[in-house]
Amino acid sequence: MDALEGLQKFFASYPAWARVVAGAGLATTFFTLLLAPRGVSGTEPKPAEDAWLIVKGVEMYGPYRDAQVKVTAIVNGTEYLYPSVPGVDWLAVGPTMAPQQFKLPRPGPDGYEIRFNMLLRESARPEAERSYTSVKSAFVRSLPFDGGYELHLVQRGVRGHGVAGKVRFSVTSNPNI
Image (cartoon, rainbow, N blue to C red; front, top):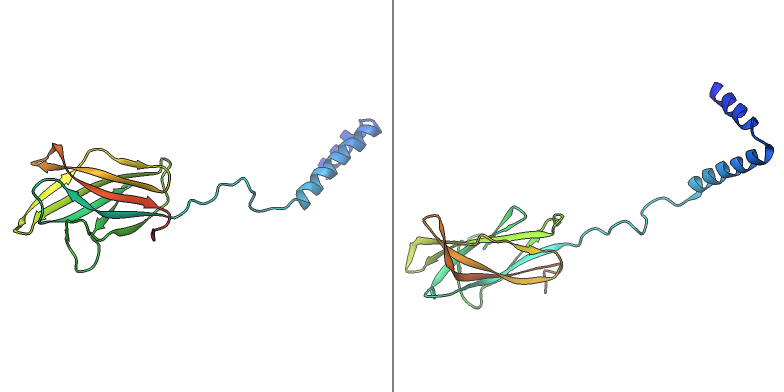
């Protein structure tokens, strides 16, 4: 109550025209806030669209005509295994490899950072697995993206210098393309 009396004394010390202008300003502010529409404005960012990683297949260079592979895609730290079909542990390398799609979480601030690792074995010697990787990442900042990731043989913890194969992949908002 004292605050209201103090405010009344404060305004009473001004001329009438100043009290009218101040009162009109307060009334305009009050009614603007009361009547203005609330909710989503047109300037808020739209939610990011869904994104899908599609592993299209593997190309191997060299003598691996009868090879089988398991590929691990690492997207922003999350691993996806290709193939991930129950009962199928390996895929035969060839031009008609079945693609597989993985729904990705929302992108990070820099989009998607994608890397691949791969195990390879020959049908004639299934116990001898070879490991392939690369030290670089593919960065996807806009969709759609279509690319390949070069793989290098890893022996006794050392990545080889020559490119031994490639994982073909895409990232898209429509997995049915």
